Length: 109
Image 1 (tube, rainbow, N blue to C red):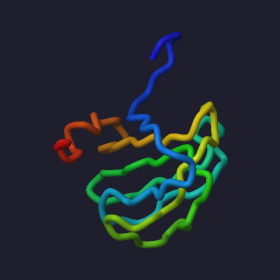
Image 2 (image 1 turned 180 degrees about the horizontal axis):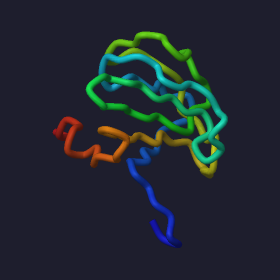
Image 3 (image 1 turned 60 degrees about the horizontal axis):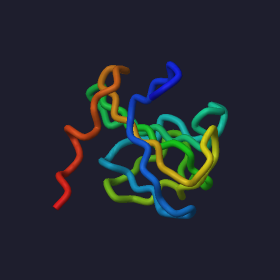
Image 4 (image 1 turned 90 degrees about the vertical axis):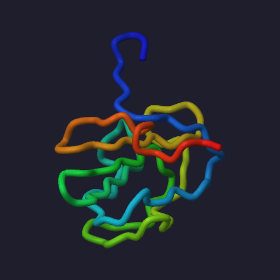
């Protein structure tokens, strides 16, 4: 991003209140709003060093330690944190390092 800002994931424009779904089975490592830039943030630990992050949520439907399944609604998208319009910030990390999410997401048809 411009101005020296870095984005390690994807920002996906969605209507406010859009369900946020877990991308794979895992355990909630974090669910809260203490990291200002992301507002409502959920981190899912999928094991073997894989973690996904879901930011800018208005509603958090999960708590730390909770097991989740792929496709389960974990929150609702919004405009919390440092954004001007509703969106979902999505990241994939392997051993704490960002991985290009486009490589791991299904191809659009």
